[in-house]
Amino acid sequence: MVIRRVYSVPEHITMAGLCAGAIGAVSPVITAHTGAVGLPCPLRTLTGVPCPFCGLTTATVALTHGQWAAAASTSPLAYLVAALVVATTPVLLARAAGLTKPPRPWSAYARRRTRYTACIVVAMSWAFQLHRFGFV
Image (tube, rainbow, N blue to C red; front, side):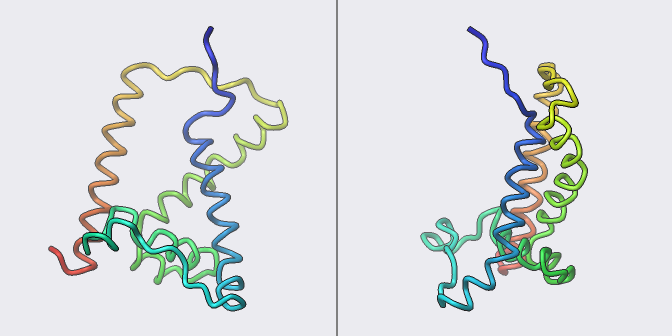
C-alpha cells in the first residue's frame, strides 16, 4: 500500500513557518504577561556551542514585528523561511481548497539535490551562529 502525501515538503515547511509566524506575533504579549523568557537551545545549554537554528525564534519574533535588522543580525535563516512561506502560501491555499492536484513525487535527483542544498544552508547558518557567538 502506497501512502501519498497530500502536501509537498515546501508546503509542510510553509505550514510550520505560518505557525511560527503566528507564535512570533503573540510571543511578546505572552512573555509580557507571564514573565516567561522562552525555551533555551538544548545544545547551547548543554555544551555552550550554538546550534544552526539558534536565534530563529528571536528572529521570527523580530520579523513579525517589522524589526528587519534585528532579525538579520540574529538569524538570516528566518528570511529564507519567510521567503518560502510567502512564495508557497498561495499554492498551499489552492491545494487546501481543492483547486490544484496533489503534488507529484520528486525524482531521486531532485531529492538528492534538495538534501544537498539543505545541508549547505544549515552549514552556513551554523557558521553564522558560531561567528555570532564568538567561536570562529
